[in-house]
Length: 343
Ligand code: F6P
Image (cartoon, rainbow, N blue to C red; front, side, top):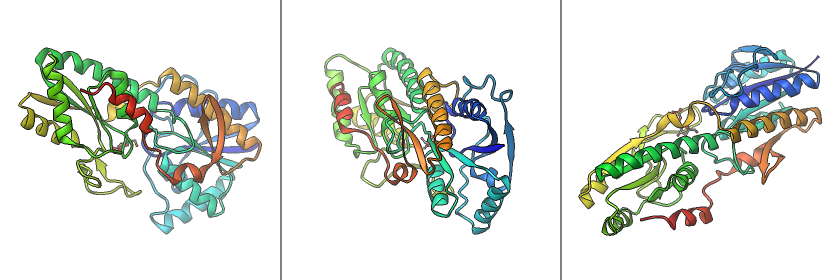
């Protein structure tokens, strides 16, 4: 029987389980056996796998996270790990591997393809929506809906207390979550990594609101926003296996600065991993399902080295390496729309 392996790597996000379910349902329909590889690339290094069957994917569609587990393991960190991965890959005798991940996981997939493990298909996931060649990654829609709801809630308390509330959202070095959740939640200012923060401008906008009788403001700031280009605020300077620092803390600095300069009472709310947890939205369930089915179709057609992607409302496929070459940052036309509502 032909065998497909599937793994989920990097930060989890809502929508991973719908992809796994779709791969299993479509794969079994097409006569494949499906092997789940646990905890991303780590599972291939340690030969840690589980069978995926109709039974164990039943009921997982609405569940957040991933039933396979995940990790930020980079097999290219240690030559011995890479060798173990290659040995286990041969031993598993897979006809194809589906790697579900963001820039790091798919970056490894791309390297493996160049190293001779060519039968890989990629599926793009991340709440950050920062992968090129796809209009959306699944996980993003759920994250912005969660952030939007939080912004709605923060509005009522900010208004009652006549306060400024700074809301720090995730997104790493792209401001997609901040921009879209900010627009949807009616933020009064949105600060993104793509444009250095101009603190004078931020305070002027807040004061302008006050002068027209609005004694509260919601400022959404992306965790990767910088006061000066190249100066991220980090929680931890230690890097992960892919060289990423842990971002976080810009909201607190911003809140202190706003309070100092305007004299208005200011609070900060850091949304953190809440944005990654819980049940996927209908959009992410459907996108994940379409991606999973398409991934199996690519395997059936032997179209390896490709990543499934969304273009308009069509599911297409693109070279994996193209998707990971450059970070997809915020479309400035969209940011201009957000700016209409500033202040
Ligand atoms: O890439 C997804 C993401 O949630 C980023 O927005 C954030 O910077 C990072 O992962 C957090 O990583 P961790 O879960 O390792 O703290």
